[in-house]
Image (cartoon, rainbow, N blue to C red):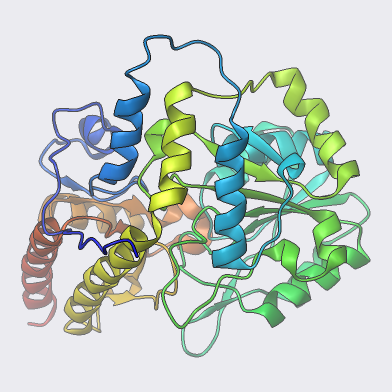
Length: 401
């Protein structure tokens, strides 16, 4: 039996002097370098050593030419998806992609025509609606709704009322970014039924599927039924799971041959090729060696979330953390602060010295919210909480005379 390794997430290697997007763009986005950036959805946690060692070994060979994604890389992803998500995949059903957003854009072009409608369920990761509009499709917004406990739900009645013959595609975020939901089977089945009745293809972004906290369980949309399998294009990958976005390698799973051929027509025109040599070995190593690292990472991440939640619970009048079921992205309900979106952003930048994503960037349903990335080391999380705590104390005193 392989000896279990204990991974330590107390500290992480500083990124300020690298070309890391979240640090390099601080001045441009926040007007100052003096903010701790907690916006871009990568981790300030070291990429696992077993991934880096695989890359070092590949570098012992001096030729870096064109390469195909090796069958061994696809096979370890197939095994991972079977073991962790009860998803059965055949190798010919997988395609390489450098990013989920690229895959989404291909899907929009392959499954709809200019002027036709694509469903987006806001608030959601901004490229969902940007991709629709930039490809000259009509955006059909089906906003999520909050129940009495503040939990986000699908609004199926609104969806059914808005769909017409020109509606061709639904972009599903599962698990959801930014609200952190893991959709239950009955919720997904309701969406499936609507899509089947209206001949709508589903693009299911499942890039956060490994970052789910017990007792929640991710259900791949394509596993709902054979009919679901026949209308679903799924985006998968290691980028979020193992902090490997810089390797620019993900995959697209399309089990239905007809859909796959339509997708390939656009995909081939763009010429995605097969990616980079080092990405192939990194991708394969992550799936081979990553299970224990991931389990320990999730314990660490949930502790960070719990610490943030505890702080916000001390100021319930002003700020609440929406209950999280997956991802490492906290959706902060700041409407109690009664600030404009501009004032709210300035509070985090200038008072808390934190660079967050403005909720409004996820759609108008995000007004009054902010998104905070808590995938950081324990030391950095303590710093983030201390900065936010200090700002909330001052805000509370000035608003409770």
